[in-house]
Image 1 (cartoon, rainbow, N blue to C red):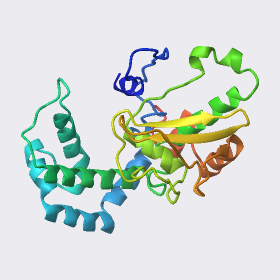
Image 2 (tube, rainbow, N blue to C red; image 1 turned 45 degrees about the vertical axis):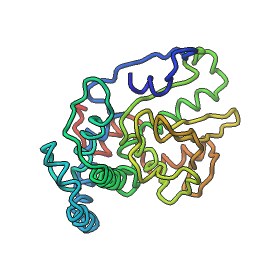
Image 3 (cartoon, rainbow, N blue to C red; image 1 turned 135 degrees about the horizontal axis):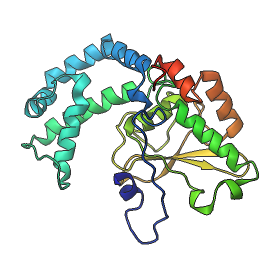
Image 4 (spheres, one colour; image 1 turned 135 degrees about the vertical axis):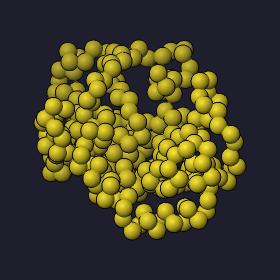
Length: 270
């Protein structure tokens, strides 16, 4: 509901949207919660020297520890998102959210900065997140796009399904950037794409053109503009379906549940 409210803030003229619930073991949109090999990669990262050094800076500043003492969360850098999420919700003013004792703007800025750093380092970098988080979803995008280009789009996609929406949490959005290996890409005026946790109603838009080209657009949050981002590490803003498919194949992105389980070292019961 939150995704749809953000996508269509004005009820007038809303596009009909069919919503399907995912199952408990959703390997397509929540595979990052089911992937032992990703967990191992993240654990290796959070115990690395770069995180240890950054953690000392965060501890020295004190804001995260002061905020964590209120939420009763772990006061150190690897748990910064949990603290940030509590205070973000508390400050939002939405009905039903827990209201916490206030912290200073400076402390909240410190908490947000720590959360942004650790979460984007984990989920937006191809050498950690790699294909684990969004490779399968991108394969789905490619497959759906190929169907649209096959010449039978009218039969395969009634008008209500000419636009397909997937809703997930921020790791899946950052994971798309990792799966596309956009670590060194130039995002132009889109500052913070790879260094800031996407906000409410953030969106990645996969725009398919009749010539078989794909263009990507990004919205960082509900109050942010929709702007183009590169679709490859060279900074290209238009990529062919064939090239995207070839890259995903070469990188080992999973195309099925079995592929996902094999890649992640997951149980076959997923």
